[in-house]
Image 1: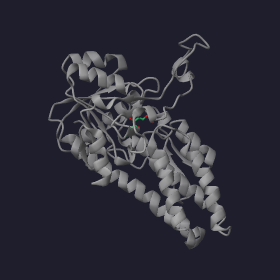
Image 2: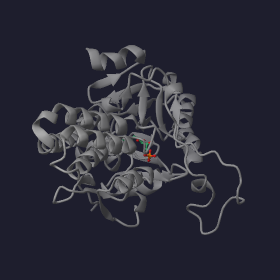
Image 3: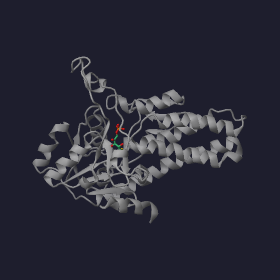
Length: 356
Ligand code: MRU
């Protein structure tokens, strides 16, 4: 009989003594399930930039815990204002570890705001407030993913094929995930969906993570290379595309893993609805359009040598390695959030989420 296991959770959290952030090292999946406990600023930043923890909501949750463990290391007897200045500097470095996903800076700002509010309670009061806040960020993400999964599930029916890009499942969030949430929730309810997972070059989040977590949950998942999506869509096997997001601009333009905009263009060609799923913490109304979203560029070795027994490109060949791209809002059939499904015109529907 097919085995169904609980969606992954608990892959970002606090160590038992509450002094370290504990993560499942995603860079080693699917071959090794290794947990790390971190509390130094440098190792926290490296965990983010090295994609040991990754996915917009997950790095937000991680940053919440990170700010808390950093705060606990500051001397309790020092003036609280001096500690806050030191913490702000460290938190700023953590927020800068990756530029595109807004959740990272969002969580850091939220934690520092909490610290400022609690300052009159002394540093132990600040730490207590920060502990409550990082746990709240995590709990809220679980609830948001669950609501997104419900809304997303309303867009598909038994037997549909869903194409997804990168990994926007439990590993990238807290539980259920965003793009994979409807699929996992459907699985729990006996609604079977078939998933086509783009391998997602160059870092293979689709192959290493999406195929891993969907397979573990007993979902029918087929791994394809990124350049096969057109054939799969042309064969009539895909009824909807579900992708996550790293930052949604006020006009609906959406940054997500490099290659996402190509999927949206293909989907438009084949008349397949292309949906973006993400929590409101990923919507950045301060960013007017996709052109204002900073796009991370990564090490060329990820393209030239990383996965290969021997280099697969001439040494020193010029490479362009953006980690994300922007999908134009005109290609998006809907943006599914925990508060409901936004439709075009996004400038109005996204704003209404915050100011209704
Ligand atoms: O570079 P990554 O692996 O962090 O990129 C992740 C993505 O692009 C995800 O689709 C996005 O963060 C949404 S996760 C719910």
